[in-house]
Length: 284
Image (cartoon, rainbow, N blue to C red):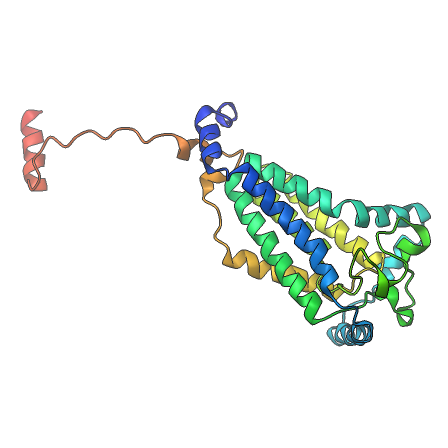
C-alpha cells in the first residue's frame, strides 16, 4: 500500500522545501571540482621527495603484511581488452559518477545530498592537504615495483608523458586515493538514501575502483585505506539526515503527513485523575 503514496504531494512538497537553492549548489559543486583539479597543481613537483615517500609507503605495506600490487595487475595483464577497460574506468567513470550521484540526491533526497556534498568537500580538502604535505610517486613510476604503467602502454591515459612537467595534473598525488574515496561516498550515500533490497550492490563501484586503481599501478593499497579512513572520520562528524528526508520509504510519507487533531480535554486543569475517572463512570 505504501507504493501508491511514495511520491504523493506531501512528500514532493517536503523535498522541495528541503532542497537547497539550485544556482548556489551548482556554484558550490563546480567550485569543489575546480579545487580538486587546480589544487593538485599546487604541488611544486618535489620529485625526489615523492620517490622517497614511495619507498617509505612500500616499507609500511610490507610491515603491515599487505599483498603486493602486482598480484592485481597480473590479473589485468591476462587480457589487453581488460587492461584497456580498466584504464577507461579510471579515466572516465570517476567524475561523471560523482556528478550523477550528487544530481540524483539533490533531486530525490535533499537531506542526504547536503551531507554527501559536505563529506565530499571535506574529504577532498583533507586529501589535497595530504597531497601537499606528502607528495607520493605512484607505483607505476617506480621501476623497483616491476609494474607496468598500463595507461601509457595500452591506453587511454589521462596523464602527460613526463610527471615532473605535466601541465594538467599532479602525478605525485597518490596519497590518498580520491578515486576510491569518492567512489566509497557514492556507494555509502546511495545505500543510505534508498530502500531497495539491491542497494548494497552499489558497493561494487568502490570495489571495482579499488581493483582498477591498484591494477593499473596508479595507487598503493595504503592510498585506498587512508581514503576510506578519512571518509569514515568525516561521516562520523557530519550529522545524519532525518529519516523523512530519505527518498522512497514509507517513513517519508508518515512523517510528512500532518498529525491528527487532538480532542480537547473537557476537564479543567488541575482536576485529579481519580475524580475524572469517577465522573466518567457516573456519565456512563
